[in-house]
Length: 488
Image (cartoon, rainbow, N blue to C red; front, top):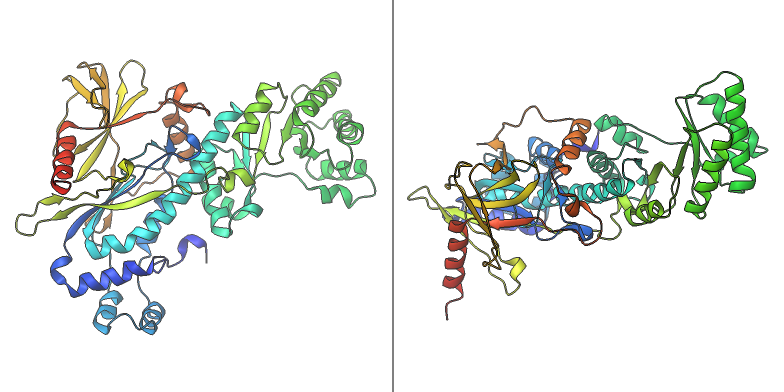
């Protein structure tokens, strides 16, 4: 069974089920609600994040059911009543979901996923949605930084052996390729998602032969079209490099023209060594050689090597990417935003209040608009608004900072465009997002969406913040609710 075909219905926190039983018992409490899944800050000091994992959320819901083993296990806990367990036997998601599509850039405090459903159903989805979206969005964002640092060079994800378990390796590879990696070393991920699998050989290949030259010759004979030789097993410059050049000269003399050939280094001073390697290959007329590097790389080290003039044009990134070592968690949350009034059918806004400003939620049923400069196609800001609000690009639009409200930007009519970010995924229990992109199509979408960011917002250090503003009606609603709950 492939990992995406598993029944993950019990992938939830225990209190989600105890609350469900409470709502089941208190029937009047099982009303329609709206939950927002969002995150409060970008990882790695970034100015943006990448939305990733929606496909697995859809697969989760499509396979969502309590089988008899699940029911028997829950019964054995001694917490759940028989009538509630009978209800679970026929459980089906009947709600609606909207989401930011995968591969899109996104920003803190705006909904990545919005769930509108009976509270029992919406509550049960919380843990799994956060587990899936938090992980893949984290790795996609980290990969986007690494790809940005590589400045157009190919980046291969090869962190499987260092990932926190099989799922992290599989879905981390998926996220990394969506964010721009050219391929992965993970063969199962390649099979599951139809993405390129890449790799060369290990030091053990060299060591298993009588000598390094024999190992190189054997490998070149096996893979003449794609021959990348690992040259740092014994001595990079005195042994590996001259032996690699000798093999490539032999191939040239035999009339063999590889589609791709070159070397990989996994240790040493990569900037210094790559310059020596490039000079030696150029001297023999191998101007198009691939010089690849690995060895605990991340975006900061790649950027530093670039600044040092390293001649590396292919990067293998493992541990620091697949674990997002600098920031190992995404921090997405799932908060109640509105409850339906049964008498009127209208949603009543709800707000979570906190002494920590960043933990105060935005109430109500909301939409997100992305605003672009008409002449540049670059993102100006995102605007969170109440669902009933209407906007026209034929009218002036005043944006203001929701915290430092005196900071304002007036966009004149005709100078900007707007796009609604959240797309319908489920409506009344039916999946309406049918023609979903493949992983490689999502990579193209991600690349194009990244291009709508200003360069200042893509830089690795101290990037320029992209503003997420509130509409005037939403801001006023939020202030009124804060005044209500904080009234002395």
